[in-house]
Image (cartoon, rainbow, N blue to C red; front, side, top):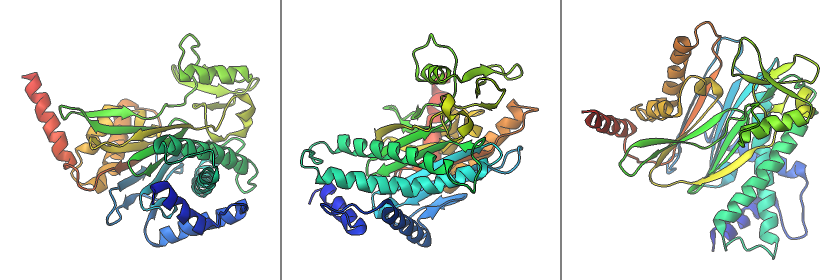
Length: 383
């Protein structure tokens, strides 16, 4: 039996999706939450600093978060091995809250997104499988991406709408970013809302470690003469009567402002929450991309801007690859960023710093050995 057919049969049994039947959102949500509880009981879900390493899996995840100097830690993360009871799937995400209620918003979006995405993916896959005009087996890579993109777009819209009406959290002046990855077999699907970043570490033909940035930092940027995604972000905000400019004491840091008020000053152009500027061009629409994992792809780093404000992509992959113990890779990266904050940004309160290091292969070349090999090559080139 083909991969898509066997997957759909399992989903149909779990969610009672049959031709002519359409279970309500509540039923699907309850089923997804039940899966999450069972996964947590079996140590397949991590919501704090630590590691996820399931026997027989190719995945190994290291997670670490450090509170900054601005108050409570508003970052949070999640790793779910065997996502949706699928042996070849993993979900991980990192969320960076901001504003007075930012830490609550980040955790709420984390929990809502996981169950909502699983529900929407199950429903989209089921409907596609029942559509006689769609042949899922003809181009699996194409249809997988289409299904995940549709599921993510629907999920982010519903999560943002749900958050707006959630009375226990005041998200009018508070919000969060969301950077998530689903690994399904040898494919990864990346969805990004905000200015967190995903960077892949891969090896070139000569064995050199190379960083590949998988996401765009969605920060507001005013210059219109550059035909880039960032200028499109600014154009959208301006067309919606929002304003984008830098404060005098923050040259180069573009922020989003209301038309007639010096508020809220968001340093990103996409986020969940922040309903005070949702009519001024701020959106929660994710950028969704995919990548085929090769044998040369070693790991991916998901991190909040507390890392990327002071650490380059190249530095990040070198720090992770030079860590002998993979379990400590995220902590090593976060602590390195904290030291860089103290050195490079004296007098500026350190931001919260969080990272997930997701390793793709169960028995790769030891990372520190790859790093040493690269350093040796660099030394020879300098001679």
